[in-house]
Each structure stands twice: as structure tokens, then as C-alpha cells.
Image (cartoon, rainbow, N blue to C red; front, top):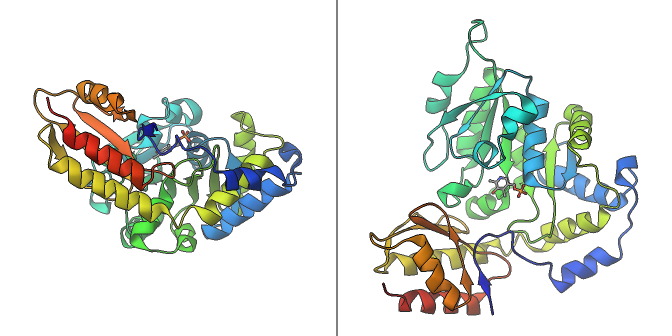
Length: 341
Ligand SMILES: *Cc1c(COP(=O)(O)O)cnc(C)c1O
């Protein structure tokens, strides 16, 4: 039994999900003829309280399209300095949208009006770049899955829009956030112009992300998706997995959070662990003790068939997911407790 805690992207489709993928109606989605893709898009738009949605191969693509359709070259986007759109998308903001970034420190990745206000470009000053988007990430992946509440989001959104600035949400793990806050997904659309969600993370679909947006942005989003090479043909088989994931795998996210918390509690008590970031959702990030390296730990883990990710020179990341059950949790905890350096 291999226990893979490197990411929540490592899950494989369940038999029920595969069953759901077999017998769906498909067609050429570039011609707009795939009924299952249309069904997934309509479902996501409704669930997110937005008017339209576009199915894409990856969350990087949905983020990059979202930002591109809200900006012009030379503009700037304001975001957390460790945000996925900036740090983990290969410089795509510069390459795809020809824009700059104003990077904020945030409170475990959550940015605030106090940080945003002073860095907005003065539109009347020709020296300054135009600030066109504030981008939030929820949950924040490199901050161990910290999350925003609607109260915070609403304030940022109202403030930004009052300055003529659009709002993008990288909601790769939005449903993990909503699991904790118990807020309604249908409210999300009020606060954003574009919202990206991943079906292939905690929700357990094999492939796919969705960009939800306003109706007036839909054609633009579809055009950019084509330009980026994201127009897919009989993609309904993948969309069916996404529909199944939304219907069946959101309710179980709280189990992932519970298991992540248990891992965090265990690690907090161990001699080879210096500190554990607060475990808010399904991501555990911890720093190893002095004299220990992440690589040394990973070698010990692998002796018990446990995989984790070296996250920095001193940190390790563990992510819980659909393919990590209570038996695996017990084994991981027992293994971690036995390790000594
Ligand atoms: C995984 C992830 C994405 C998208 O990644 P893809 O691998 O391109 O699907 C975007 N944002 C965050 C915060 C993520 O964790």
C-alpha cells in the first residue's frame, strides 16, 4: 500500500466515477456540440452564481485566461507574492498577458484593503501602470491552505470595484474553503468577474478546470482558450468525471480536513519537527528540526511507502485527498512516530 501525500492531484478516478464517464453523450466541443461539456459548464456557472463557464484542461489555463480577458498589455495585477498565478505558472502573466504584478505579503497569503490601496496605480499619472485586476487565491496553497471568509472577500471586492478594478479568483481549492466556512458557493459570483476552479484536486476528477465568468466575457474566454490550445473535442468524457466529482466528492472534503489536522497534531509532537503551520484545510506544511533535512525525512518515509513533497530547503508538504483513508492515516501516524534521527 503506497501512501501518496505529495498532492491532492494524485487521485485516480473511482469505479463509480469511471462508470459515470462511460455512457455520456459527447460531440465536438470546438463546434459547441458536446452536451456533457455544456452540462458541466452550466452546472458550474449556476453553482458559482455566475452567468457563464468554460471547461479547460488545467487550472493554469483557467487562471491565465481569466487574467488575460480582464487586462490590456502594460497593466498590472495585484496579488499575494506567493500566489500560484505569479509563482507557479511559468511567468505566464508576463508572457500571455504582457502585464506586470504588484506583489503583497498578505496574512498567510490573504491580502487586505490596507495592503492593496497604497499600490494601486494612479490612472491620471502617465508614469504609472494601470491596475486592472486584484487576484485572490482561496485556499492559499503555499500557506497550507489558509482561506478567506466572504466577509473579507466582500470588502476587497467592493473596494476594488469602486476603483474600477476587476476581481479574479484562483479557486483551485475553493470548495475546501467553503467546507470550512460553510458559506454558499452560489454567492461567490457576486464578488468576482472571473473564477477558476479545479476539478482535479480534492474533488478527484482526472483532468479539468472551469473558468466561470460574466456573460459578456464568455466569447473572449473561449477565443483565448482556443489560442492557448485548450479547445478540446469529445471532452464530455472528462466533463462527466467533473460532474460526478461535484455531485459526490464535495461533501467528503471535511474528512480530508480532519485527517490533515490529525497529521498536523501528530507532527507537532515529534522531535524531528520544528514547527507545523496551522492546518486549516487539507494541506500540512511543516519545518524540520535543525540538523534534519526534508530529504532525510523523505528517505525514512519511503521505507514505509509514504510519499511526501520537499517544499523548501527546510519544509515538507503533505496533502490529504480522496485516496487517503483512515487506515492510511493510522499507518502514516505510526510511521512518523517511529522515526528518529
Ligand atoms: C493546482 C493549482 C492551480 C492549477 O494547477 P494546474 O496543475 O494547472 O491544474 C492553480 N492554482 C492553485 C492555487 C493550485 O494549487
